[in-house]
Length: 145
Image 1 (cartoon, one colour):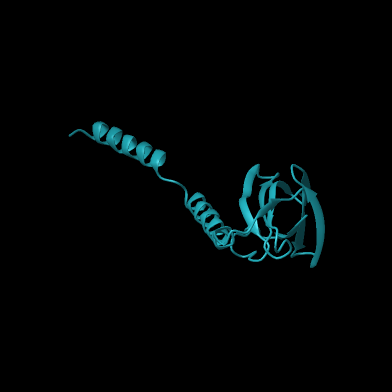
Image 2: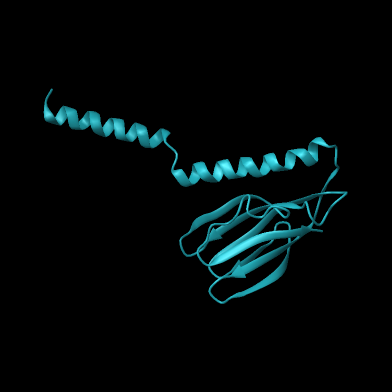
């Protein structure tokens, strides 16, 4: 087989592989989202009524400045945290235990890079289960109202 023909076949295989292989970050994000949803199953299986909230209390930690604060964010609203844009899409909690078992769907975008830093459910009782991976900021849900 001639060299140009082999190069064409290699390029075609590489294009095909890129089309069907997910980047590692997308795989990890998908797995963590699934794990966080699986953590909610015991509450739902016990027959607890889930109530949709209109606001969420969100804690932000700035590791460089060494300070943290709590902000109220309504469903559909967004707030700027440094280069991050934090948007609350949904907030739910079991009616029996609204403080500890709240969970919220957040979309966090890095405005400077124009890339999504986080998209998924965060659970108040287990913030490390599905967390934002950012070198400067930590963001997690405290409660839904």
